[in-house]
View (tube, rainbow, N blue to C red):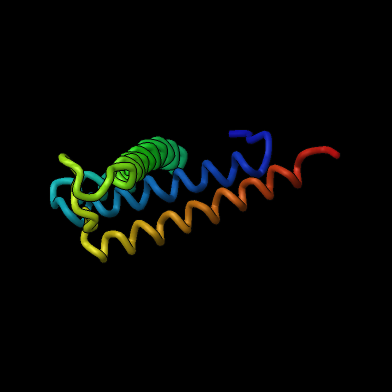
Length: 126
């Protein structure tokens, strides 16, 4: 497995870690998945990392879609005038702890994007 630059390696590593985490969460929530995931640990590392990378990419895409839908809901609510027919109250749609977690995850994603951009700029010939 060769990578053209460190950014691709970092992104692949992120996907593998995200996929492994998703598998761990599934194993903790579902006893059937737990046995399935434990039996998979006997597989070769390259097979597991490829599977986790794919799962990580899917999880990342689902998270992006979820955040995008929340952002679009928030922007559509803010464009409605208060008291207008069909407008919703300005109360949050998610519990405060979920909103806080989303804000923390958004901050982490922003930091990762900034780090990726920095690495891209370092590898770009002047």
